[in-house]
Structure formats: C-alpha cells, structure tokens
Image (cartoon, rainbow over all chains, first blue to last red; front, side, top):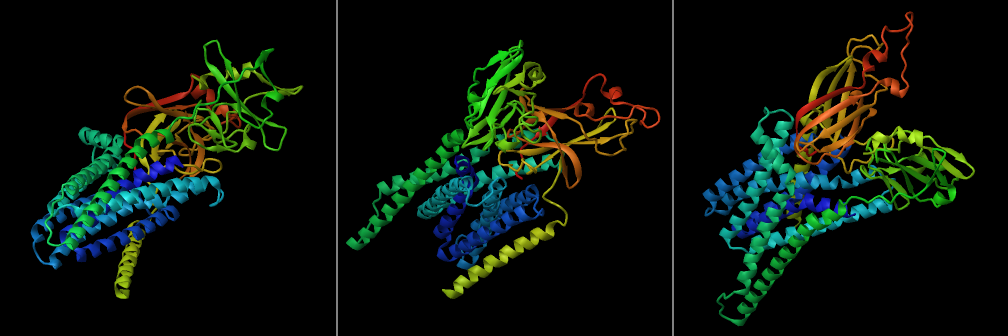
Length: 415
Length: 188
C-alpha cells in the first residue's frame, strides 16, 4: 500500500501543481471566459490520458520514450509561445487573450497524458500478479494509489486557489517559475532518451546532465512544491496584514470572507505540500526499507549432514538454517511444510536469478527478497523461475538430512 | 447550460479520438518494444554475443510481477561457424549465462543468472533487473558450458559434428566485459 501511495504521489504531484497553477493563473490574469478553455483542456487531458493508458496496456503501439520526446518539445514550444503571446496580447481584447490560453491548454493536456496515463495503468500492473479485483492485495495497493491521488488533488486545488488569489504579476511570476522548473527537467529527460537511443552521438556533458536529472528526479518535484509553498506563504502574510479600504459593513464582511478563504487555501497548500514532502521522503524510506530476513535457526550436524527434525519445521512457517564453511561463508537453506501436506519444500535460500538475496514469509506466503515474486509453496523444491536452488536431501526417521558436501557446491552463491 | 456541456463533451471526445487515431497511425510496427543496444556482435569462441535492454516484461510462468524492476536485460547468443553441431545463426540452448553490472564506484549494482526464454523475436537469455541509478557501468557476461546443464555432443567420428564442448570450455567459462555502458533509467 505504502509503495503505491508514494508512487502515485511522485507520479502526480508536479502535474497537479502545474494544472492547478495554470487554472488559477488564467482566471486571475485573463478572466473567467478563457478559464473555461482551460477547463476543457483538463477534461481533454483526462480522456487522452485514459486513451493512452488503454493503448499502453492492450496494444504495442505506444513507444513511451518516443512519445515523451514529442511531449517535451511541444510543451517547451508552447511555454515559449505562451510567454511571447502573453507579452503581446496582455492588454488586448478577450479574443486575443485566448491565444496564450490555448498554449497553456496544450501544456495541460500534455502534462496530464504524461503523468496520469501511468497512474491509470496501475490496476493493470497490479493485476499481473493477482487473481481477482477483489483480492486483499489488489484492494490494498489501489487504496494506496487512491490516497496518493486524493492528496495530490488537494495540492492541485490549493495551487489553483493560490494562483487565483495572487496579484496578476505575481501569478505570472510563480507560474513561470514552475514551468521553467518543469522545462529544465524535460530538457534533461530528452537528453536521456536521445543519448540512449543514439539519436544523438555520445556526449559526456549531456550524459552528465541527464544522469544528474535521473538520479535527482524528485528534486524537480521538491522545487515545484517549494514554489507553491512560497506563493502560499506570501498570501498568508498578505492576508494577515490586509487593510483593504471599504465603504460599508457589507463590503467589510466581503473583504474579511475573501481573506479568510485565502488563508484557508494557503494553509491547505502549505499543509498538503508538507504531507507530499513527507510521503516522498519518510514514507518512501519506509516503503522501500529492506526486509530483514528471519534469523538462522540452530540445527545439529551428524555424519556430514544438517539434521532438521520435523517438529522444528512442521508449523507451516518458513524456517532458515545455515552451514558455515571453513572460509566463513554461511550457506543458507530454507524449509517449509507445504500446505495441506506432510511433505516439505526444501531449497537453498538463494535462486539462480536473484542470487543470495533470500526469501521471507509474509501473510503465509514465501516472497523473494529482491524481486518480490510470491513463490508457490508447492513448487519449492522444484527447479525453475525464481524458485530456491534445488539441493540434495533425504528424509529419515522423521528428520530431514541435508548433506554438507552437496551444500558446499553452492558456497560461491553466498559471499 | 446544456449547450455548454455538450460543447465540452464534444471537444473532449474529439481530442480523445484524435489522440487515439494519431497513436494508432504513428507506427504500424510494435513500437512499444524498442530494444536498446549495449554492445553488439562480440565473438567469443563459437558464440556471437550481443546485449540489449528494454522495459521490464512479465514472464510466464511465475515471473509476472514487473513492479520493482527497471529494465529487462537480454543476452542474444547465436552460434558462429563451429564444429559442435550448432547451425550458424541459431540460438545456443542449455547455457548458463551469468551477468554482473558494476558501477563507476566499483560496487556491484546487479548480478545473477539469466533465464532462457522466448519473445516475439525468438529465444534468448534474459532477466528483469533493478538498476535505478544512472551511471557509467561495466557489464560482464560469463557463459558456462552447456554440459553443466546435461547437454551432450556425439563424440564418435560417424555421427559427431567433429568437436566437443571441452574444446571450447576446457579452460573454463567464456567471459566478456563491456566497459563504459552509459546507462540512464528510461520511462517505459
């Protein structure tokens, strides 16, 4: 659940801020009529993102990297055209103000397709390993994703309110800051695609830029959140110092109400930005924390074999045993009684694919520590896939005997 | 009000269908499956070795989860001219192929053994792996003798192809290291 909560937040937060800020800016700067154009763009963005998600999952027509390149460059172009057209038409008629709004509308559609399509693909990705839409695992993971969506939606709504409440020039300034941040990330990301696909020749400087952007991809999201928080703090301070003139009590009440709303939305923006930052740091750390393997249990060694009595392992849980070689390497073995059976799944605590990473037990299932693949307990002891490496053993008088000689062959699997 | 709702719905529907139509027309091929080469056509004894990667893929049975992987790494192994009975250009079965990815700091970023599998372009050795950091990596492939997996070659003069696996693997496994793999995680 936490993983999908964090993933959804990381996936959506920058897009929500951009869309919210553009919506608020357009209403603030150009008025309500062009604002409707932006609302249509938001709707179009949702539908196009849904179409993209469907095409990604049911067809092989979508080359995400190639599409992203187009998104980056169209978005960058629209940002530049928006700046030029805003300067040219800022004091002209409503009809002219539609031109910069069209460019912002395109940016919104692109941002939504870029971020929201992958969010819409989550159910498909989760269902790859689930049997039913009603399984606890599916519902838990989707709940996490939905909470992430709700939190980022609130950030988006508050960004809209903040951008609308700022002064015209301030609103343009903060929107430009956000769009410049996003443009920087898009330029760096485009280098990544161009270099990887060898569309442009290898270039050390461009690779370093793309590498920095990739390894610090959250930085751009923090900057977007920081810009939103700065705008919210500016509004909060202004609302506390409000001294707008009024001519009658009704007008006074209206002013008080206006600043109360500004305070509420600014506070909401601040609180939910902090929540997003906590999700992207603290909860991210928890969600990606390495699982600690259960300790190795003691067992006797008799006649060159590990001896594990049935009564030590007949509880249906995963048990881990080990043999320390002369080189100080501990070769680990797992044993689990198979469900509704008197037989045991026995293998090395390592697999051919993921190496010595080991297995852990979660909710009655055995899971690979590296790739999180849930093992079919009944197939443990058989070769294949991410199954534990098969080892020699014998059953004798209610005991499992694992020859040390056989284990020694796998010393190199463990470091 | 009705007119406004209708115009919004129409605009959205038109944009969605334009988008879908453009996407469908953009490429008739399997555009979602773009192999990114790491190195190509390295010759190791009777083996031609190439390495590519692309998006993590679900594999059946038992490897359907792609949630925590960054890429699908693939070793394309085809036979060169040989006296072991492999057809030139054919995939070489029964191999154990280990991979090891080392970062610029000298630490191992990923390692393991590939699984044999088939995709739309034929059989290969591959695995989904985690490699979240962009870096300049070195990647080593170690190819074990198919004899380790029970593969035999006729050794008599009448029916045998002329050579035996010992001729190639007598001195140990085949190994190839590619230095300077500039890798940046992709958005798949």
